[in-house]
Length: 165
Image 1 (cartoon, rainbow, N blue to C red):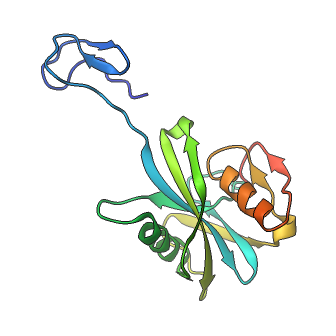
Image 2: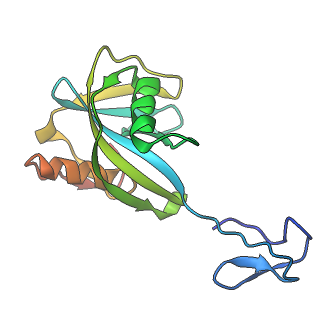
Image 3: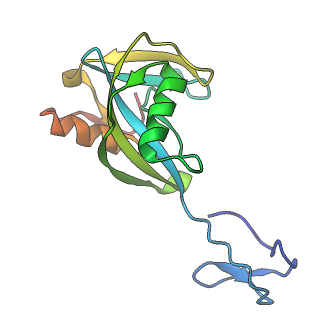
């Protein structure tokens, strides 16, 4: 939850009811709703593409993901993110599922996207790897649950880890 302590409208202390509200009852309510994020299990050349963000430890590889923008459908957003982050064109996205990511106050809309083209990393990424479906593991957080569910739907039971890999 956000760390608001005072009302941004009138500076009165906030009180916690169901949500933080202004103690003077000026009408301010801090909803702190989750941010919508799209994520893609990118299938490229028959393998799963996992990417490493430049801010992550060298062992962390995960799904391509990004924020849903105003006036953009989730399907448009995930194709945009795949193009921006790995330079690939994607076929029609197929919804895998919707996943809570409470630690980051996000809700993840996860898709499977089959891609074509040559991998070209965008400015946020420093590396990628292509992993055979049968060798691909998943992680117990965020986008890892979507990868697990997609691999299961493909007939594979992934090894589960605590961190992306």
